[in-house]
Length: 241
Ligand SMILES: [Zn+2]
Image 1 (spheres, rainbow, N blue to C red):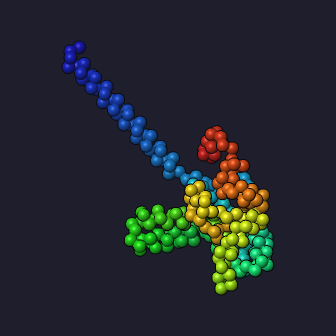
Image 2 (cartoon, protein in one colour):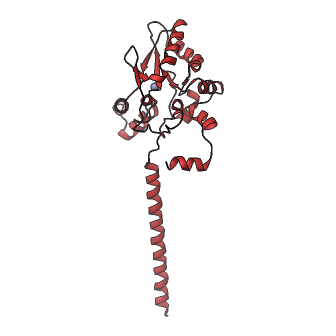
Image 3 (cartoon, rainbow, N blue to C red):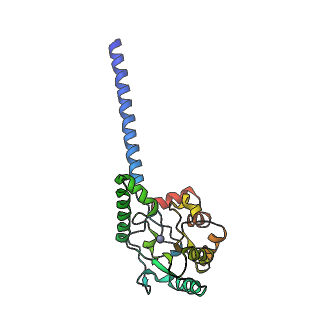
């Protein structure tokens, strides 16, 4: 073999290696893209009161609940109604004037709220991309709002009769007794991904609510600590469902 053919063979090998490397990179990138793009759905097979819905856990499209209409037209999951009514009765007996400003929402309702917020930020001179990012800090992406579960409510004060602070403070101190938690406290936004929302309460049942309140946890922390085995196999099993 002369020097020229040895060199040619060497170059061919290098080119082949480059092609293999490039192909591997493309496959890796593509699979990462697919995995990243794949929506993860909330696990609704366990305790309905503890379903975790957030930006990483979409509500399955076939999730169904029985809704009940409140006297002001808002709807909630009928299973939380007795606790909600009792909480409101007791709050009113303590001299507070409060009402459910928001209950169950459809995906379309959520999309509309998101669109309005994006438009608001766009009108302030932000690009569509930036406006969307900003809106997503305050508004849940459709499919990821707890309001779509029917287990969450926004509670406001009737400000002609009492202050919001009084209502928020009473709820903060008492809601857990009825099975509700302040879902997005200011000191947990780095976990929940949602800024402080003193009006947003979520039903989780009395037992979980008491533990969450006593131990100063958010729902994500509670589930991690008490309900989800921190095991790689469990995660893989859940992921491949
Ligand atoms: Zn809310």
